[in-house]
Length: 207
Image 1 (tube, rainbow, N blue to C red):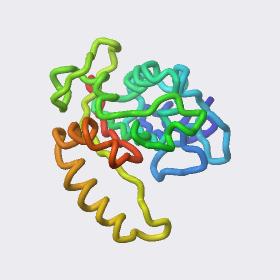
Image 2 (cartoon, rainbow, N blue to C red):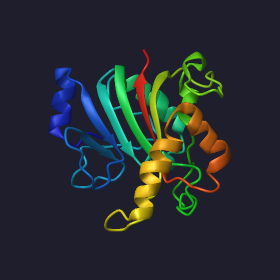
Image 3 (cartoon, one colour):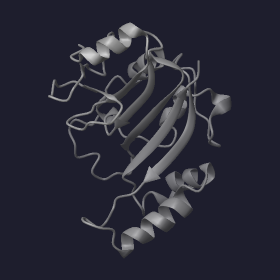
Image 4 (tube, rainbow, N blue to C red):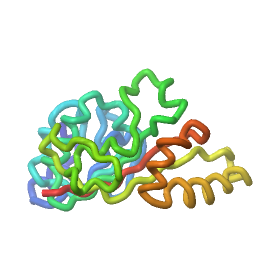
């Protein structure tokens, strides 16, 4: 359900939309806010487990989502709907809990956690960036995986302490996220000793 006249006018004019999925009370400049709850700042009310009927094909150019996809039971259906509504080359920025996040299992509303290969199932096998390949035949939705980044908890509550700087500047940047090969080594061997907080993906629509 569209609550904002600005969203209606953008769709009617044929202009592309920027959408923040699962916004909660957070506003993102330049984006329309979508959530399942009709909060004051929400422009579109929608259940991400259901078809996004409010949006025409190829009507979206930017998707942003922070810590939301882990709540979506019908992830395959959501990715297919995002593929439908997004224009060719549209960008999706998605941040979700990494599977080693020890707090991720505590939230009863979480239905899954994510790893390096989670979004590769929506990427043509020959274009998957990692050595390990996963099946690409479960869905017709096709994306390009442009970037993957594993993030770790900030240890200092108010400002970064020495341990936090050491972890972020050295382990996170120079060891884990140095390359696709280093990311795979982290998930195979190191995650038990250094659990991650989240994993961020940047995808583009491959139409």
